[in-house]
Image (cartoon, rainbow, N blue to C red):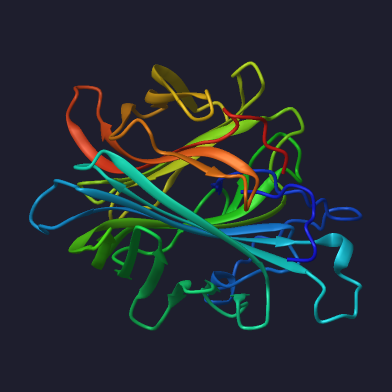
Length: 362
């Protein structure tokens, strides 16, 4: 593309993940609002600097089994390019759309991934504002009256999935305003859709699999996500087998110390319990070093909240994604299991770790 702003990225956002999303909004940040409206806020927010829709899940071939054979990720990032907003040309890259897709094959002990980037428009990339409808070439995430549809086709893998809500939308933080630091503007708007029932087809090489399982969708947007001294974050989104949903995250400095933390726990049919900055602790228990980047990632964690202690274990150590040709980041994002303090397996979901192969700058 003719215009490349300096390195961009995702998360997690936090949320939502990763890279180096360059854009700094001009002027003072607007006062945060606490009146999210749906379905409008399911769609894009082009006035904000960064945004992403982040879908992950665990898939198997047998709906009656807790076994998972595959993990999948489909993430769309939208980035507002501040320097081009006043340009009159239709070719000005005012909004950039990035997309990452990945499949973890536990039997094959491999993770396959791909990435795309394009400016919004011209029928190639879009992020509509009235509802969830994002696409980049032949990858898409769209909501209808009955379900979400997620589609990606890449060299060596692909999937075509339908996702149905089983629980109400979960507003993270205070009514959807999730703090990411001590300053008022260090925040994001953030909601989750956990416990999505998922079914469809997944392709690895030439082999098609009929799959079903459970997924998690995060949507997050922000103008200033991290404190200046933060280099990255650690995040989990876990669907528990009893219907609960657990989110936990922390932002780290260059020495690995926590700068901020948060998350939530919602039991099925109950209101969410939101965690304060001092109520979440991450303790690394086991590490893996990437042979590609030499980054050293914790692949087993003890995560403590005020209510409980959990163990998070990666189901495959090498789930590192190199997205330097799109968002500019190298990060770890992978299918993982959740155990309670007695060692009982209680859930499954995704672990995300950023800033281990180089500091993020959002």
